Image (cartoon, rainbow, N blue to C red; front, side):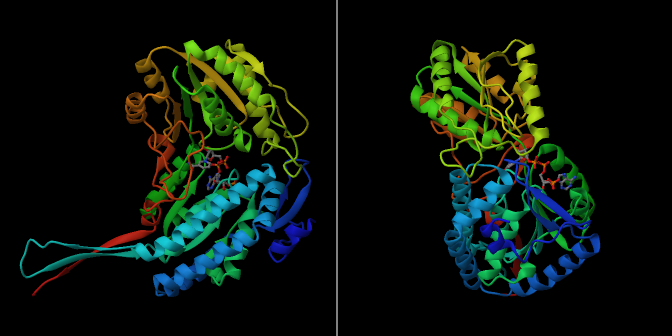
Length: 475
Ligand code: NAP
């Protein structure tokens, strides 16, 4: 057992057995540790305890809640190296990237510690002289979160921090592949003074068991989900019976467009960052590249040169920029997409090889066309399919021709075009001359089947608040 994992997680880990879930390191398939699989009755008990704790928590002043979150934020910063190490071990991303995620995750705790104090209501000009009208904001109550393995900390803090800031409690079900980061970040919240019943990590061998309980329990007033569109659809249906409030951060199929007047070196740098971070396993990763015919060959050559410098390896090793994929099943799917695209006429220009275990080479495909399946699917791996375009109207139609609407990117020096294209793209987020756009101060979220609701920014806390209207008569 790694010393560092031990320090933050000792009390949370259990021994191998029927009621435990093994956590693996995707870099070498070794078992890092075991976490408890909670039974349904244990989960019901946690919900009951959380409800009681939430009643007290909502009675605290915003400043009191903010102070706990501020202490949590400081502890995350102090433990950033250990958290990053845990994350790399269970998720595979390079250590520097894991540290980046820890800092990004921490930024939501700090942001919502501040926002806790700004949940303003309104006074409303009255249409009746004898009345005064106003609104107040109140926490929605006990909330639940289901999060994916690709951002094991940030996807939790983006939900738990605004929930706690608003006066809610939060039961979190992290992916069974990356629960250690969840336990570690929660442990730091407890050390900061947060009662344990307000932030509860829950895993079961079957995510369906937890999902069913979260969706159907009357005392859970809100579910926030980040994950695939497929699972999102199931959860939306399940929450209908209790008419539960939901936020859905789902899959993406981001177009990355390079116009003929783009700064090509900046576009290539943005393309590498957007496509290959986390080995291509992010919802906002560029999924398909549209490059103007007049600069197509030049772009592809420069892209290949840049990608050839990426070092593949165990994320704990110095200088590694691409770690393993999360598991072998994922690698098989990604390799299949390459084979399929090549059979449909795409040219393999770089990479394409399967390496040992969960590793694979970053891959560039050229002469890709809109009809190929790799264009319509979320790849979730390190493959960059590059398409040609000439006509802007046709390009926009193709860029929008997807069920998804999360992130999109384009590079141009033309201000007029920048506004028109940004307005025409049917996506919740647009990066203009930028390949990495996420920040705690801006609203993150999608349209179409990429979901609804926003995380971060001033909108993020609203997801955990209800607006109550007060009408005072007889004045
Ligand atoms: P996933 O299969 O949908 O799983 C996400 C979470 O849901 C995991 O905790 C999983 O648990 C759980 N889950 C799976 N089936 C469930 C069910 N029937 N009921 C309740 N919970 C269930 O997605 P993933 O493969 O982990 O993550 C990749 C997907 O997430 C991609 O589509 C990506 O685009 C999306 N994503 C979106 C955002 C965003 O902000 N929009 C951010 C990151 C990722 P187990 O893993 O334990 O089974």
